Image 1: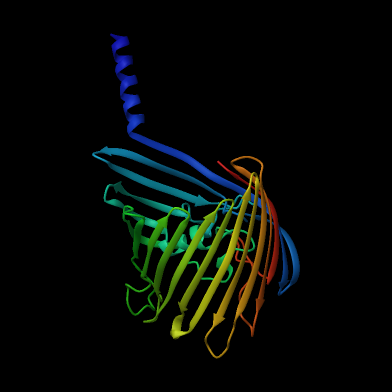
Image 2: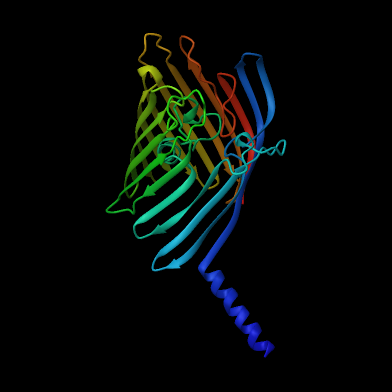
Length: 332
């Protein structure tokens, strides 16, 4: 009898394993950051998450049958140099969502990356929003949205789309409307072999005033052998109606364990102040394995007429107009 029970338990465990899958993953990234042109002069420090924010995450799927799956992600950031939590101490400050995926696409609910941000990170920016030359030093990133529902369509003839709505849910007693701080984000994507094109839009209401900011991006990436070209143009509207435009040109080169990233970002301020800026970035990465690499990067920004842009990295927004990074990243 005990053999029958043992066999039944084994079959039950095997069936459960086949229907659901939970993975533990993460990034451990640390290096040296030398900053130049800060208010306190030049400085050197040990930093965490220069190329990719250090993180520990859990993600999983459960097969619900008929092509339908439940999915979830819980991902928290940490500072490897001190052991402290990232994202202001939030336990799962990087991502926290649950949803369903099937032939209709996917619907997810929680704290998530905006579709607009993924257009920058995955298509426009050769630095993939990391290291000193990242595009979001100058361009608005619109990284994460709280209280958000995202619907992603399936791909049809190369076309797909993502739309997101983030409920404001502000509790600030000074806010005139408890629904303020809402956010809307969406991307229309086209993929045809080596070509990827994204048209994205992001709008975020101010938490207190009846005003909003918005950004619209057209981004493209084209792969030709070991070379990948990147380009983007962005139109921005700030609070009060201020208008600016950004343009990006970038290059990714891969050969064996070697990777080179190059980019130039131009910010044109259309206000009378004309606070324009230009960023130049370069990085070299050497892959010790499929999961571990060494990196060096440099970024420099020329700010005109008091423009406020600083050179940061994947975790830190930076304090100066130039920075050099040297470090190691391990993904697990």
